[in-house]
Image (cartoon, rainbow, N blue to C red; front, side):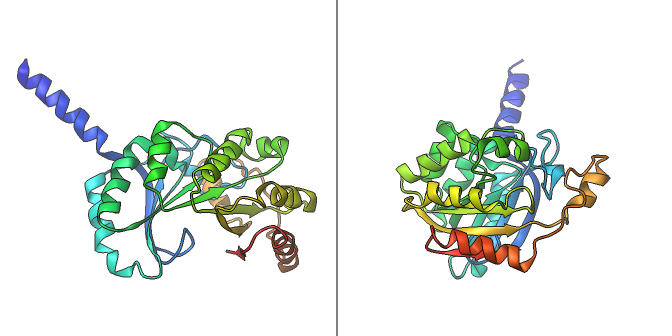
Length: 258
């Protein structure tokens, strides 16, 4: 019986050391400064209409990776982390696995590796707060500033995201805002101004990144047997992107189009 208990305990210990990951990008250049080792975690409470990776939505999918192995791979990439590079944890929604990410970020910080967290801000608890203490930079995805529109876009209210943003402001955590510009859905000038007005006095916000809308994930929806909600929506024109950038530049010290 004691052997059985020992075995069960060991299995639980192993589970604590596992991250549920959808995919890994070794040389990411769009998820924080410099060259990044990017982990895309599995599972997300949002169901964004334009999601490029709908296969990350289900929590039960993905592949389990040992945190020790992730740290080892990140260390192997260390020579590439010039110009502020490091490790970014994205998703899905990484804060759903915040308890386990604490261990990962603790080990990365010991090795002097820059840490970034790409989140939609919907999940906040003590584990997330502890994780943020180990996070050098937050990439906060604000899907829409208007609550009704946010619910249309994601299926959820934006109240938690804005509360998350205010907590980042309170702890003075360096933050980059990210905003996907979807024609006819998230590009109305009045909403862009509203977002700017809301965040203009957040001194912790270093920049805003405009993410152009694309249809690269449409085939993934079809492959999963799902109807792509924005079928027929055109990609952004240069003029649309320029106008959005011009509006945001009235409120933020740096605005870039990714």
